Length: 227
Image (cartoon, rainbow, N blue to C red; front, side):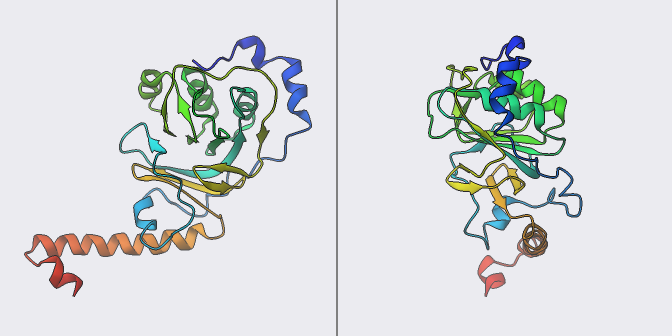
């Protein structure tokens, strides 16, 4: 699952470990003034060059799209402590973004963390690393983006890690509260102030693309349409 035991979830030693490391959470309601549910990451890729995570981080569940403000987590090596605390702090609608600090062996996400995230109303999770319990994640229908699967899990060591700090995930810097959009093509991260304008431009491009489809079906060639 993920190496987390009930005693550890409520342990005072664990709570003391992170007491001095926590920073205020990003405002989970910050996306209420705009909607990205119809925006495709690939459309943004027509005019943006930055903010895209490496293509190796892919969705586990097809035909899934999420967006929301990031709650960032840094998890070094096989230490799963930071994620346990993050799952007690995350607010509904937020997206967990996890920096695995280059670990290419241990799975930090599984059936228990999926259940915990769903109970908190988390929009989804993006992991620069691996997961376990694939069948349980798929059965739960919880949106996960990751590099793949591993049977070796993180443990509750309480050695280190950070929550709501700037992290590196998928080759880009992710700040707390940054807007994350993830779908079947990949993951993009945007500054909140830029997201509405990017969404408007992408929506216009998608409308134009639909008109191109209609013209192609009517018999025009792509060369004629593109000029």
